[in-house]
Length: 238
Image (cartoon, rainbow, N blue to C red; front, side):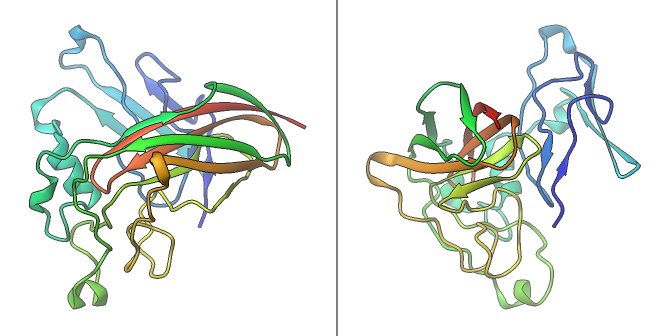
């Protein structure tokens, strides 16, 4: 599946206030929901933000406003992610809070092509929703799913948020985009379950860069319903 890089500029711009409002420049396949937020001024009122993306000669736009019809609380977010189950509304999503996350070390670091760097992240969670592997009904296995469904339980994954070169993670990370194919290392894949949480909630990872450049790696701690993220910028030398 294709992964697309669109540097901030004419092909990846958010207005007003852009072009750079913290949006990703490395796009994974399919859907990656609730990836970033933009803080707007108090007097934003009925204005709207417009995110314009152009790739392969096709332009798409996404719009954001403060209109009440578009308000999303944590229950809406969790049901859209899939923590509410195939039909939505699991009781143990009510009152759920996002995991806590702290990435150790500087927010901007140096690295060298081909030489692994160590990433350390600390997480904690309230145990909601209860950890459960993804199981589908016979009808869902035969056809398309009407609503998202996801395995729940605390996990942490690193991924490339910005940067054009390939980054290899060791151990391999679960996908953070909605990969529904069976047998994949994906919380949306049938049979997948969250891995054991390491002692003291400390996750160790190694990342290796294939090309020089500036990269933003994002750590995402997620319980299946809500997530917390932190970014680390790497300036990678040849």
